[in-house]
Amino acid sequence: MSLTLKQKARETRILAAEARAHEANASAYRRKWEESQEELRQKRRPSKGAGAVEAALLESTAKLSY
Image (cartoon, rainbow, N blue to C red):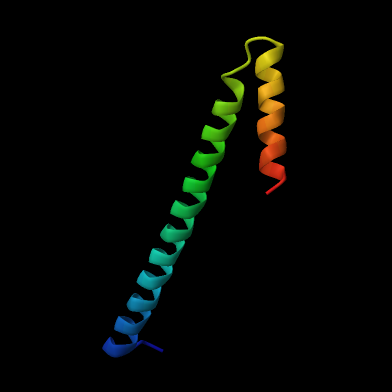
């Protein structure tokens, strides 16, 4: 059974909408991943002695208390 022109157009619109939704989700996940990577980089940087470790612990504890 072949599709009519209207059916083909409808199918194309549906597929395009699904592709846009997929891209939006991928962008959101990518953005969250990049933010988490930046947080990890920020946590790794101040590792110069016990004071930096203590500061990192205080910072992570403060985040948990919210």
